[in-house]
Length: 259
Image 1: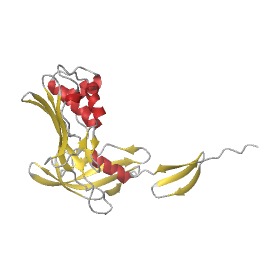
Image 2 (image 1 turned 120 degrees about the horizontal axis):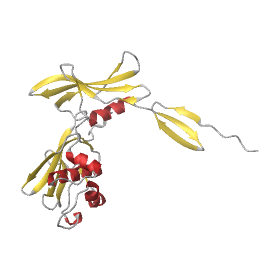
Image 3 (image 1 turned 90 degrees about the horizontal axis):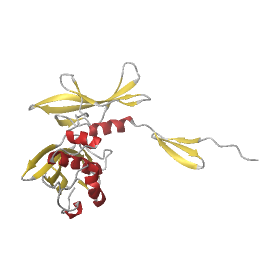
């Protein structure tokens, strides 16, 4: 006589996970961690001002209706040469998810930070249009290289800044500021510090031929390489960027790249 089908059985209820047995195989379902999501949102947001200090932990605050919870990090920021107090806020709706994070300035005005108007290069890349000039071409290549980058071991690196594009001595250059966190040397609970360090991501191509000259992602003092690109991603970057080489050979003919 066939045995009846078995339903999932809860084995234990750990603080951050639920263990189930399903079809003879143990599965782990992670419990939603609002603090982890708040920390991720903190790293994703590109502030238009300089953050000079920030609280290590988030303060939890329930909304009046009880349908959501705000996680608030106190900050100090500098704007126009003057320091102010403010706050970074992530609102988590119970059972639904996270609303876009925002920050509050000293005048209690709500200010965003995640949304940027798309550039001509980003629009062209999304729609498959031909690049208008070398400046648009180098920004497209930079966008595709950034997506394929591999952070150096232990480095958490983010970019939410627009590219600055220009032509210098026959080379089209696209660069933007990046934020990064290095692992803490202590053995405490926090693996990374709250405030980021800053670096630079820079790509240069020949303005006449679109040939890749260099690509690098370093700390501001250029002492630390923050990310690298593998050969496979480098070979396919022109196809993904929709940029054509005009005269010279393939990308593999360029010098070694330190990105």
